[in-house]
Structure formats: structure tokens, C-alpha cells
Figure (cartoon, rainbow, N blue to C red):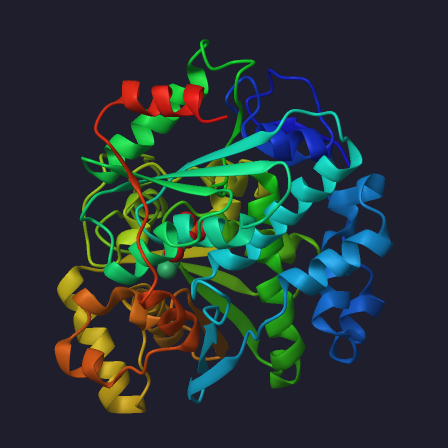
Length: 434
Ligand SMILES: *Cc1c(COP(=O)(O)O)cnc(C)c1O
């Protein structure tokens, strides 16, 4: 498969090069050159296929001959070694729980897939330089990337996180793994971490010394595997015989965009709903037609505090850059923190369901849509385990959440981080810790 840059000013590349580069030289996001619908027989027969077989059918055209079936299937088996349960909440509303992986947020699947692809490509070309994955996190991305890349040969991971701004559990997930993972604790906020990472990617002094790549959802290998969830849900919900609607709490729009790719491959999804917090760029765009990015606003659903959603350009490409076509496929609603907390309380009292702040926004947006379209069956994506957001959960509900084993096992581990407060310190670290 060939990938081109959506800025149309860079050469086309293989999957391997797209994964290693992350972003194209013209700063565009990579996008597959062709997209082939899957045959009807695949959808007719999907209930008889395992998760690994479904994932393989969905992704194989995007991998092409770069990873043969006998290597790709074991990678997928390893990536998908946990459950993706659908929990029915109400007659026509269900929660798709994407938090049963090692770091308890949906980013595990993409991070694990990307890590194993890089590991595979490294093992093929023994002589290539070591790769350094450099990533800034406001919480969830860092943990998923750290866990996904742990022990992968030929890859070092350097994670920048804002000191004191991530939850205790998230910090443990970043700082206790060791081996090829280093956590840099930045005296600043998330935007400072992000700025330092961006500066490093452009720094000519680092070129040739560190082979840097990113691991956020701009990377094709982190973005694409997220489409698997939608196929898995269809396998379970196919017999419902209603119009399937997915509501996705969104920040950088990688997850929902992967769902739209699944739809493009022929998965019968009737409509998408995006729920946001106060960072309501896309709901506003759908309403007004004006695409206005802003500085991000801090909220209790902080994994979605994004003022310039990086994957939106891929969503436009999937809709032929046609606003009306997009608007027919996507509805968007935004919610305040207090509405989010009300929804967490409502889900608990009404249905005895504990949702995290992100999933709750997905629920609110879905409810809004379903009320107007009662012939639909809606699935909201519960993108993280509520335990990851304990400090902002209503206390009564927080007190009842049981500590999952993935979290229990890291709480006693010792935190190891390197404190930095300026770009020069990051640069010094990168140049002196090969
Ligand atoms: C990253 C994240 C999101 C947002 O996903 P995007 O793909 O960036 O839209 C939502 N919820 C949680 C818990 C996350 O970690």
C-alpha cells in the first residue's frame, strides 16, 4: 500500500516509511492511496470470525505485502489479547467498553499495533538506526505508548508529561516501567510539553543523531487499528436490525475517523455522533460551517482538551472534502463539566453504570441524537476506565470503584522520572542518552 501526504507536497511512501516518519516532510498527515470495500461475504459471515480474523481482513489492504499474513496475524493476536465488551444500558443504547487493555484506555490497541509494526520493521533491517519515539502526553497517550513499546527492540521511548498535571495512576503508568522507556517530568503544562516535542522534531542539531518519530494518532499505525472496535461491535449487534449509530467522545478525532474508515470499507454504520467538552471546534463547525481552531480549554475530560483536532483533515478526505456530505454523516454536541458530572451521576443512579467523564460525554451526545432518531441503535464509546479519572469523579461514585488488577500492580512501584524545565534540557537529554 502506498500512502500520500494530505498536504500533497511530499513523495508517496510505503507503510514502513509512513510509520517511521509519522508526519510527511511537508507536515501533512499520511493517507492511503486507495481504499477498497470489503466483500459482502465478509459482513454476512462476520459472526463466525474471531477478532483476529476480523482485524486481519480489515487491515490487510493497508499493510499490503510489507508484513506477510504469517507475521501479521500473530501481531494482531498479541495486540488484541483482551476484551471489547458491549454493555447494554437501555433499550437502544449500549456502552462499548474500550478500557480492558493494559493501561485501561482505548489507546492501547493503536499503541500496541504501532509498537509491533516498528519492532517488525526493525527486525527486518538490522542495520537501521535505533528509533526514538518522542511523545508529549496529558495523561492517557503516554501510558499506552509506554506499555505498548516496553521491551520492543531498536526503539527507545521518551515521554514528556506536565509535572503535577496528570493523575497519580497515570503518572505511575508513565514512570514505573523502566527498560527502554524514559519519562521526562516537565515543569509546565501540557502545551509546554507539546511545544518542546515540536521543537525537537524541527531541530537540525538532532538530525542524524536521533531518529525521532511520534506516536500520537497522526501516525498511521496508531490511527488505523482503531477501526477494529467498530467491526467487533457490528459482529455483536448485527442481529439488532436497527440503524447503528456510534457516538465517540473526541479530542484529536483519531478514534472517530477510524470508525469512518470502517464505514468506508463497507461496515453498515448509519451515522456518527461526536461529543466534546468545551473544546467544541467540530460541533461549532457542523453548526456554522466555520472551522475555527482555538487554544485548548482545561476540562475534567482532559484527554479531549484539544483546540486544533489533528485528524480532522483525514475526516474531510473520507468525505471527499464535501461539507454537506460530512454533515449528513456526523452530528456534534458539546457539554460543560457540570453537565458531564450530571451525566456520570445519572448513569449511576438510573442504570447502575459507572462511566468516566469522556464516556459520559459520549452518552450525552448519543442521547441527544437518539431522542431525535428513535429508530436507531446507539453505541457510545467508553474510552477509559473511570479509575483513571478518580480525582474528578463524584466522590460517592469514586469510592465505590474497585481497583482493577492492571492498576493495583503498578501502585507500589517506584516512580522514576527526569525533571526538565526547558527545551535545552530536553535537547541535552536526547544528545547525551543515546
Ligand atoms: C485520547 C482520548 C480521547 C480522544 O480520542 P481522539 O482519538 O483524540 O478523538 C477520548 N477519551 C479518552 C479517555 C482518551 O484517552
